[in-house]
Image 1 (cartoon, rainbow, N blue to C red):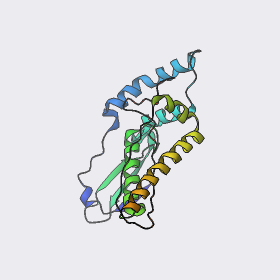
Image 2: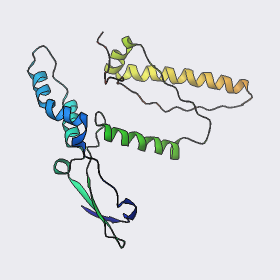
Image 3: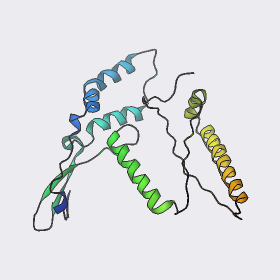
Image 4: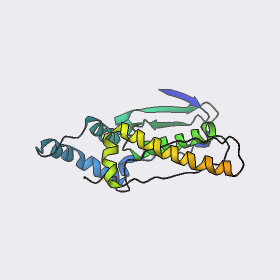
Amino acid sequence: MEKSLDLSACADYHQRNPKESLLYNIFSKGLSEFLSTVDNDPNKKALPQYVTNELEAFLKCRIPEESGFSRWRCDGVCGHEIFVAHSCKKRGFCPSCGGRRMSQTAANLTDFVIPKVPIRQWVISLPMELRFWLAKDPNLLNAVNTIINREISRFYKERAISDGVLKPHTGAITFIQRAGGQINLISSP
């Protein structure tokens, strides 16, 4: 696909090579053996297909010969061209696509969704014993999230009323983070 735009400011752009990252090298050398080991172990449950798809897509992300590419050409005087490799656009594992999605979501929220009012950020960490059940049961996760948001809202409404606000309103945006710093979901109960 060929697209045209003014690339004069991008003349020095150099796409990063994902094959040079440590994470890519670890997975490219060990993924097939890992998947084979998991599939052939009668004592372990097979990985869900979406997990396998995510990991395999990561190995193709931003590699032109695997994922394809777009060619961009400057319509201006310079005629500069760049080739941009396609990304996997997956949600779960790829750090590049996850980071881009996170940045785009934050920009959209701050530019178009959240009004220019005072805001607070809350980070709620639940006990490890609950995390397993919340990960397995979306209805339970929804119920716990509703309770947490309702109580935080009640707290701020009561405080606003005591400060003289007649009809306070609150809102919430929730992001569920299922992994810890070690890419762990939970500890087994």
